[in-house]
Amino acid sequence: MKKDYVCKDSELATEGATDLWECSLIDQLITEVILSSHSRAAALAVDSAAAKLMQNAENISEYLSLRHQGLMQSIQSLQAHITSLLEDIREIADCQEQVTADVRMAMEEIDARTRELLTGVCTSLEEELNDYFRSGKRKEQQMLEEENSAQPRERNAFAFFHDIFGTGNQHDRMRDFDPDSPEIKFSDRREALELMTQIESTVTSLHREAEAQFRPELEKIVSGIETGFRGTALYATENIAGRINTRLEDEGFTVKISFPAVSQLQTRLAVKTNLSALMEERTETVTRRRRQSGLWGKICGAFGTSDWGWETYKEDVSRSVININTVRKEVMSLTRAYFGELQASIEQDINQPVRQEIDAFFCAFREKVEQLRNTLIQSSEDHKRDQQAQERLTRRLQALNERVPELITDSKALREELETML
Image (cartoon, rainbow, N blue to C red; front, side):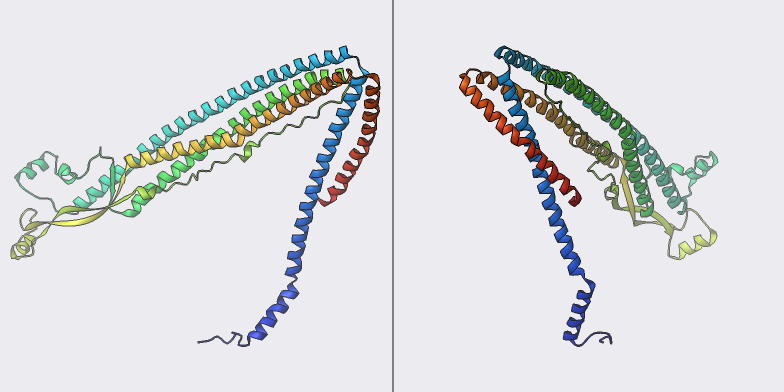
């Protein structure tokens, strides 16, 4: 049956949808978003190019100035500077070795602390699993007691004397219960699921508690790495670079050091486990007793006999079985995998960025000093030219250097104009 609000005129529906689309101005909004995205991307590209242009201009200015200064100094002075810069390069390498050794020790401390936490969590999990096992075994024992108590007790002369001396048939009733068996049996599947859920919750909680405990210590260790690195870098910039700047009358270095945020540390392993899949559904055949259906059974039933007029029969019952050894193996495997992912995350998100930052800093520093040394070596070669060649080179260097400030000024102005678009 068609509903009365269904539009029968497709052209009218199309026209209405078109009007609705045009009135909504969604197409205009989409166009503006696209244009804005393209404009911002273009502005970022131009800003990056302007920054690169300004950096290159500053490098050119420095190079031209050094070449010009080199012509103004004696060959002996240049050789002294070249030798001193070689010693500076060696000292930079010593600083890098010191920082690298400090970082390696810190990384070893992180690794040792992680292994210590793993051992502690495994011990806690082992204790928790043992508690759950004992609790599950008590429930299993209670279940079997209730099932057997619902069955009439077989009476004979031996049972009479057992009752007199208080031993009863408890062992007979519990013949299916083995307190040392790793298997826990439940007649009610919900109880088995409840136990597994409790175990899952405990595993997840212990993992999170371990990481929460470890994070402040990790931050402290990484902070120590950063402090040590900054101290060594500060020594390198203030002493080594300071000596170079003093000797060459050059401007100082501007060093920007950044470290990865420990708060961004994430593990890629989902700590939520699914142990319920380890639970086994099993059918067991049990022996039960019931009144005989014939005349004899009715007569014995009338007299309430507990030994005559009964018969045994077989019955299939469903059991939800949890093997605690299987659960323990899976839990420990998950825990080791979790900490393995934690260590991998530390390596990827902290260790590698720190090492890369250190290598990049000292590499740039060393290359800078090597570049200065190579420029001075080239200046010393300039002294081997004749006087006229040196004068022509001096005029050429001065002419080129006069054009650099304008290039730097234009690059700075371009970046300032782009700031409003970023």
